[in-house]
Amino acid sequence: MYQLSDRINNMSTSQTLAMAAKTRELKAEGKDIIGLSLGEPDFNTPDFIKEAAIQAINDNYNSYTPVDGYVELKDAIINKFKRDNGLTYDRSQIVVSTGAKQSLANVAMVMLNPGDEVILPCPYWVSYAEIVKLAEGVPVEVPTSVESDFKMTPQQLEAAITPKTKMLWYSSPSNPSGMVYSKDELRALADVLVKHPNIIVVSDEIYEHINFVGEHASMAQFEDMYDRVVTVNGVSKAFAMTGWRIGYIGAPAEIARACNKMQGQITSGANCIAQRAVITALEAPVSKIQYMIDRFKSRRKLIIDLLSDIPGFTITEPEGAFYVFPDVSYFFGKTLNDYEIKDATDFSMFLLERALVATVTGDAFGSPNCIRLSYAASETEIEEAMKRIKNALSEA
Image 1 (cartoon, helix red, strand yellow):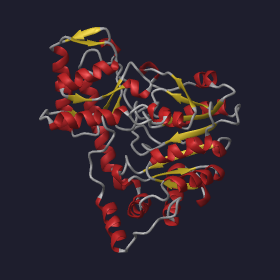
Image 2: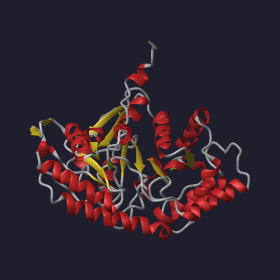
Image 3: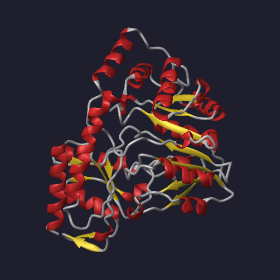
Image 4: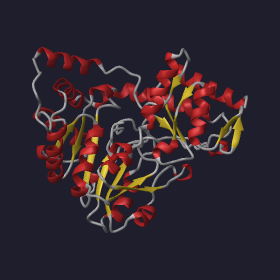
């Protein structure tokens, strides 16, 4: 038997990826599973971006790339931050990585020492806690609920801060809840943070453009927070480029240099063809992808209307991203078709086995009363999935 490291033995498997693997396994057995577990747009990458990639191949982009990204891409990112977020960065503050997940891991590895605490408002994206632990930090969960629209209050933030607090990580629009912090809400959190000048904030804005409530707000837009915020973004979600694996940060130059140093020893620069394509993606007006955002908005209404017709689901309307995160604690302690439901994980497995619909337990996101359903699926699939769930529960 191999002696694997404590590091990997102590790491949890991504439950979103585990559910996706289980879904593929059941499909291979011939079962008709509707997958609402993965956060992946069902659209094709827009043609104008694909054409840029093809041109890059024809132009013989095939060599190692600069560790922190092509200069032309960094300039496109700088212009995007200015245009969409009112944020001013220079090249020394930008690092391009192999997906926003690597961007997050870089930041954790260069900022955290053993025992440093990282505040994570719950629900949080499934990998935050594990990335923090891998960097020997300590995740500090701040629970929220459907009643509070899954938003952390300034009072909760203040109460979570200790002398060991090093960072705050959050996403807006949120995966998994879909909630969006308004500018005023971020300002209220910033008012707490200015009293604790050593805390660094990671603002994960990967769903920025999939926003149904108006203007996107960034923590770094506040002058008294700018030097303490790492803004993380990428092209996977809004541009339907999940497999292209390009993410990036805008950060204080010292942090960016450290991330560049870390990345130089782990992966080096991101894929050359993908980088050239992303230049074109970011230089294009947001209107070029508006058709996808509009479809997500109509799907949100569809899934909310259908879920609202199923007893036992408590829902808050998501303001962005493409997830709905209902509280399903009504079912805990019940037996459904000889299937005992003790928690959200049991309920998610019940839906998979009895309704043939794949979801993700809220335990994966630090919110054990909920499950996550992705509506990055066709209207037909959403309608059929909700029908199956309703039928499975009505027969129980």
